[in-house]
Image 1: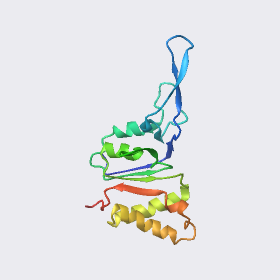
Image 2: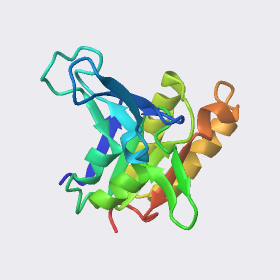
Image 3: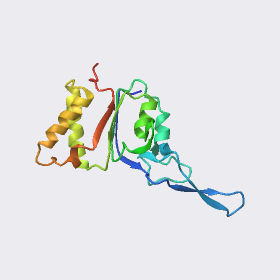
Image 4: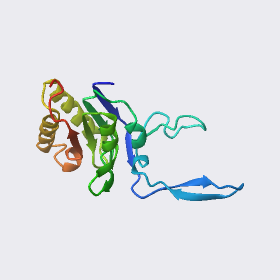
Length: 176
């Protein structure tokens, strides 16, 4: 497993329970069933998304698929995409979505976004975040420092740019 996994792509969470068409027992008989599992409604769009041919990989990594990855030993997963921290909330259980999936897969910590993010501001945030990590700053402190820099900048002072990203899991330096 990688020590660090960075995925920059499009994130999706289907909030309303979507439905899929299922073929019935007789020809022409179809009906819709809800997709209730939130791990099937939280996903990342990868290569091939929107260009899939029948029978090929769909280019979607669902939270359910992510949970089956072997990320034991992966210190940090960064999901540089929209809405990667969203999911269904279950009382006493927490949020069911990509965060839970990557934790189940074995990742020690995960950086994710709580809403749709802007590309340029996110890129700047990520560059500074990794610079802090390379200097030995802890994972959560590295994010806090970047967010403070953005708050005091002319271009990214609005919380829309810096507040979307949160870190869960191990807060320590990657060197610890």
